[in-house]
Structure formats: structure tokens, C-alpha cells
Length: 443
Image (cartoon, rainbow, N blue to C red):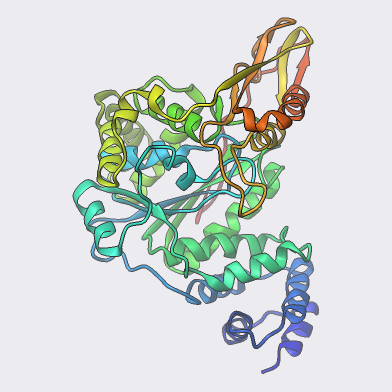
């Protein structure tokens, strides 16, 4: 078997066999197939695509290229959740405790962020003392005892995917749905979940900007899950404006805790309830969305979901007093108001621009070596549909003096991100579609 023959075969639109895909992934991961041949193959996939079976085979080959986690010692159906990312997306910090309070064990491995804000792990580390490094036995024991643990990803999980993604990033082959889908799902499968709920974002702040592309990606990932025996559903949710009002690590922890208290933004709470409902259905704790939604609302109102978060923070060495008193979390010295220069109604918010502004203030990483400022970020005061007068505060920049040099550019980006018109626009739906093995249900 030769790499050049497999490149030619895919270039000509033919399907590769399971063995041929395994040969490519192993050969590249182990250094026998050079970058130039793998990049040629990735470009062939970019133009010719892959069948559902090929994509599943690629996923499994990458999942098995490194360490895999066996969650068999954890009682119950383990349901994982993955978001394709967005601005202000702190759903895991709400979802995990919610699902655990309702009886679904959550054994989650999350990553750090590279871009406008930190990942889930960075956000949790805004809580003093919180440790994301747990040994396997302690990790399993905590989930069995508490129902919830969130830890950092293993350094040796899916090394083939890490290597291939880095290659795609510099060869203009990132935007390939089979390659995106297999990259996401290889990590979820290696992490050992029995079932997977996917939150596929769509809009200006999402990787997929259009609804149709988001549905295509969701279908590809659900197909992979089905092919490899993992029950998988995908929710297509809005990212045409940030989720909630807070963008930044400690700011997002504060908003997540407020949501678990029943005091958070309506959009964040509702998206979390929808995603958690599907986790409960897949976990066998509810028969349908209506039953799941009612159970989850009860867990919010009773304080049980908040107690689960506090239990996890305590078990992982964090300071639970910061959950009771949010003012004890990291904060920035300076709060700069960005004021409207127009009158009317907010008709659009370019979410990605808000995220980039937050990164300039120190909330995210421009490179892997960047140090995050946990107190920095952007706090929105106006969302789509809200009325605005000249001089009204649109958003507040949270920054420390060391980032003063980025203040003017961040302010310009935030101001430019807001579209204001004389006509009130209807609020966008929070969820556009549900993708299951049975098809696509649009709302």
C-alpha cells in the first residue's frame, strides 16, 4: 500500500477502504508519511468529500491513535456534550451541574482556549485553587460519588488528530466538513462517552456562519456517532450575538453561577435547559423534552444544581466561598463604558468582533504561550432588539493597566460590532434545528 495511490484514488473521487484510511492515519502519526503527502490527501478530501463510512473510519483511526478512556467503572449512562464554540459560551459550567443533579453522570474532559476567550478549563481556573488535573481513579471516584467532574484533556489523546489539524491549519483545508466532523468526534469517542449531545453554533460568532452549513456539519457528526455505536444528537443554536452578557473567564463564571441561582440571562438558561434535556433523554432519565425540561427547572429552583457545582469545586480543591460571594473572583481594575453614538434599536451584534475585543484586553490567547488575564473581558449591556439612546452604554470593557495599549482598538471593535437601526427587529430564535439519526427537525 502506497500513500501516493491513496491520494490519487481520493483525488479521483473514489472511496477509500477502512484499511486504507487506517494506513494513512497510522503512517502520518508515526512519521512514515510526510506532511506533503498528507496535505495533498487532505486537499483531495476538501474537494471530493468523504462518505459517512469513510468519515467514521477516519474518526475511529484517529481516536485509537493514542490514549482512550474506559468509563466502564462509572455507574450509569455517561453523556458527553460538545460545543463547536462561540463567544460567551459558558454552557458546560451550567449544564454539567444541571445534568448531574438530574441523575446523569458527567465525566467531562475539556480543553483550553486559543482565541478570543479561554476554554472551559481556563474559566474554571478563575476559581482559586481549582485543579483540573485528577488521576484516573480519583476522576472515576468523584463522578461515582458526586455525579460530576470536569478535568483537562489527556496530553496523549488523539495525537493523529492534533497532528492533522495543525497541518490543515496551514494548508487551507480546515473548512472541510468530513475533516471537522471526524476531528470533533474522535476526541469525544476517545473520551469514552456512551452518548453525545452536540451544540453546533451558527451565525457571525460561529465557525459555521450559515444555518445550512451548520446542519451539514451536525448531520456528519451524528452520522459518525451512529456508525460507531454512540447515540448522538445535535442542537443547532444561535451565535449571531454572544450567549448571555459576559465574555471573559471570571465574568463567565459569575454569569454561570447566577444562572444556576435562577438569576442568569434568559438566553443562556434556555439553551442550557434544551441541551441538558437531550442529555437526560439519552441518559434514560426522561422520556421526552417536556419531562426533561420540567425536571431540570425543578433542579434549578431547588438549588440542587448549584449545590452540584459547589460540590465539584470543593472536591477539586477550589474555593467555594467564591461561588457564594462572586465579588471574590478575579476582577479587572478598570471598567470602561462603550457608549452609543446612535439612537434606535440594536439590530445586529458581530459576535466575533466582541470576542476579538475581549482577547485584546487579555481574556484570550493570541498564541499557545499567551497568559490569560482571568479578570478581563467584555460585559454587554445591550442585546439585539433592545432600544438605545445616544450616550447609552452598549458594553463595559474590563481590563487591567497592563492592557491599556489595547483599549482603544477594543473599544473601536465593540462599537463597530453593534448595528443600530430605526426599526425594532424581532429577537432571533435560540435554537434553529435538532439533528438526530432520524433526520433534521427545523424550528
